[in-house]
Image (cartoon, rainbow, N blue to C red; front, side, top):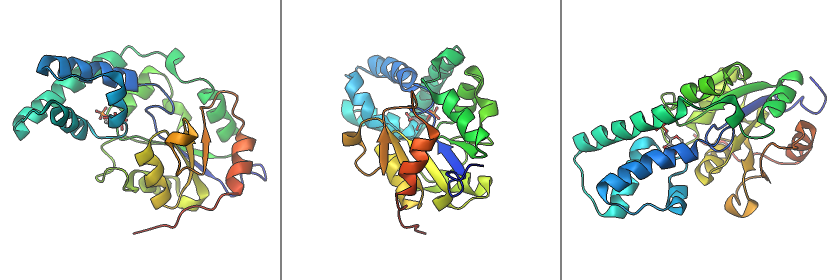
Length: 231
Ligand code: G6P
């Protein structure tokens, strides 16, 4: 391990929007459902579903359309959407991994860092399999791991435990406001992926991993103080 990475030992990645762009497939599947229900669902509206669970997403769409469903109907339609989504991600290829991700993961592992994938998606493993990324992670936690939704930090805390590290030794990479909040509440270092104006609570925001050097991230993170751990 290099000097720079002595303090930062764990690298925890969200999946959707960080490693791969699955948001477009979630949108296609939700849009199909919204169309069947006669709910207007433009792409910009989908931004509001980022990081929400499958059921929370369905409930938002119903709310926007002013529709009511019984719990049984919700379970049925969430399942229908999931089948459509699974059909789409089954055809994903390694070419769909976002630019710079694989070199960055290699750099982390070559420096002795440990990697975890922590996703709210129950389809995370299927996506990793289609894109052939499974072997890049020491720990993989999908949506069945955490019981509490973000901004509760449970998903990241479970990843830190599995890596045998404390939150202050880990950097979380997340593209969503809820993910950034969860990481901060959990006492992790947090690098936002996207635009700084969308992620004001992140300690550092990068547009993505293309041309991103591990050493630059570590230098920036060394200067940060992680948020206070709660709970
Ligand atoms: C991630 C995505 C959400 C998605 C959720 C559950 O958090 O950002 O858009 O709804 O995972 O995904 P799943 O594949 O389990 O329906």
